[in-house]
Image (cartoon, rainbow, N blue to C red; front, side, top):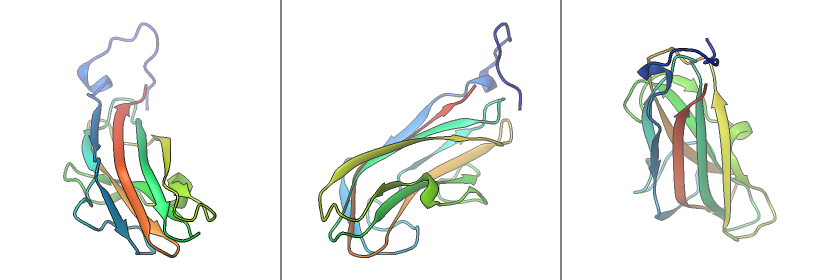
Length: 152
């Protein structure tokens, strides 16, 4: 995909608007594979891929576990504009997750990540949703947020 270099004429698709979603509520869960649960389950947003085919995802949360087990939250990017639906473009992965590692024992901590997603189809609609899991115990998430901006 082309880079936007100095002197390049910029059009609207070069820098689609930044979009974001966030929640202040808290919920708990016990599932050990990435999924969504609870009344505050959907934290996500639809976006359009820029002419570079890249997007920056910023995501964060307060995260805890009732034991000394791992709790993780990661983005899942799908094709289409309906959040949580469509063919998976970027699957849930511990490699991209905000994680609380064993040892915190119930302490709520704040974590955030930035991820550059590449290979998007120019002008196509995508959606991102934050999903979560635990290795054991009960996980807690609150103050989840996700922001997608174009990457030049």
